[in-house]
Image (cartoon, helix red, strand yellow):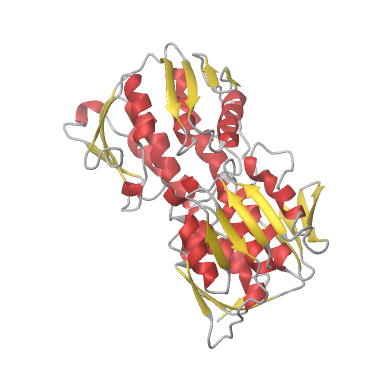
Length: 418
């Protein structure tokens, strides 16, 4: 896909997908409760569709028919894999939980260890600590356990979502660095909305045995998806975007993007049916610092914005970005260097970008070729840079369907393609 021009001065309204994070949690709750999902604004993301398909496949399996392991393929959907690890561990049957080549390099040991302490029968088919998993599912009583969430908060969310069906409930102690803690709080809030008795006290989460209730859950629009439009406005001369059905008062931790981009000269106004963002001026300062430990999905949009605006910046809390759909640290560094950005790697957790006096510019005949690494967030964060650098060719542009299938449709409101 080639982007050959982009409007520098725009006033548009765009549609966002429903939050993938909320959608997947709501689907898991309905699964554990044996409820037919009545979820409004469900995400159209590939991961959510895949989760629905796999849950249907699992529910259609009869234990007595499973003489061999039933394969459940999560492709490269990390959330789906982690959530289904617990779901299959507590469901009688024999399961082979697998995924793509990339998924086989994404760690799962800390979740498996926690489930084993509850009595789960889980083995590794290949490399210790990594997918695929051989799971002999059975009922759990629950109890008191701990889980290390240094690598992913989804290990905790996976356990918590299942906990109300445990006979003795669950007391879960969160060990290690509190990575992406807002996502655990999101899980707790959605569970509570479905009637679960759950609360967090610092590093301890308490879940009582209870029945989920059948509620008409409404998924909010996705703040992670909104970050690319914030980037677009920040890089523009005088851009305005109305983000339909987005809420400032959201359960999503990535709503902090509004505060981040104030420092890049973008202001947010909550309206009746969404949020209006507009360019208000130049960046507040030339030395930006931010810790992404709680909101890692925002890193690609923020680092691309800093490169496009020519800012010095220091990013921390990055370590777990290396085990996402791609190694998002090395991917963004490699691609942004193509337009003149300079980086200094301080450690696996800290990266600096240096101010760029003048970005490279590319013509339609000599466009820069960006590789998305088949990673939706890499593709969406690089596309707005065409405001600053001219023609862009995007490899594997279709990767956006993983979380924001209509991104390119909305993007065409400000761009043209070759």
